[in-house]
Image (cartoon, rainbow, N blue to C red; front, top):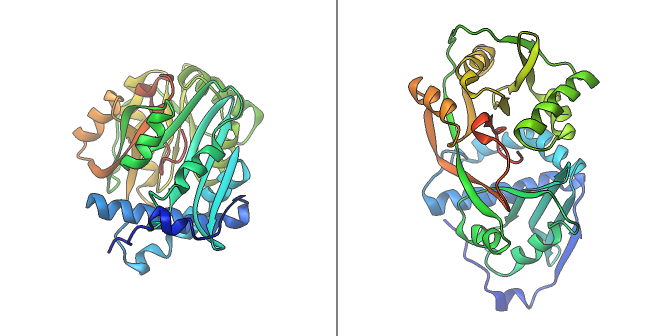
Length: 313
């Protein structure tokens, strides 16, 4: 059952405070995120992404998400928490990478939404200085979307999760798949590819991704032409030539056959090469999707697949 909303007049009678978040708040804000996503899924009649409301299914997800939430806390640009009568009821967090501001999370507990807390939280994590771009991977919650649109941040394309039970697909390719090592030369290669495809680098994400996923650099004739990360939740993948997506995704799928019962990724629907390959292979599209939003168009996202889950670019 969806919790009854708190009216603004009732909220005005309570003690409302805002404070910076820390890494010690990670599990608390994860619960806010989880409650909010479950509520949105119920309102949209879409529960696939959460697994429903079964506590036994939901409990293990914190340990799965802990590395991500702690990474975002350690590297946040702005991280603010809203409390009502001492109880955490919402939070917002953003990161800044090479001058690109990215809102990673913005969630208010069911029952406290549409009561003015979101407006204040959002203002706390906006950039105070000039930035190259503002970006958000947003759910389809219309109240949040309206707030982003009013801030001049517009939807560019949807992002959809494609998945299936992994298969040992073999495709011929002239690519050479080289496992990543956490070295200066690897980071320089990744930064150069990101600059070409996304318009900015993000060393913090690559250092974290290399700790939690298996990364590969893709070489052709000795030159780096892309990269990708695989695990039970894969991505990101970035390729200079989008025609390489079938071979890259087949390689990634082979990596997880023995390790996971699911192979999935968050695909921008402007990436025709990936979409056509995945549909042709029988992948299913999740009913829960997000939008990529930005203040101005940037990046070559027809050459890109987002990390799963899509908290950042």
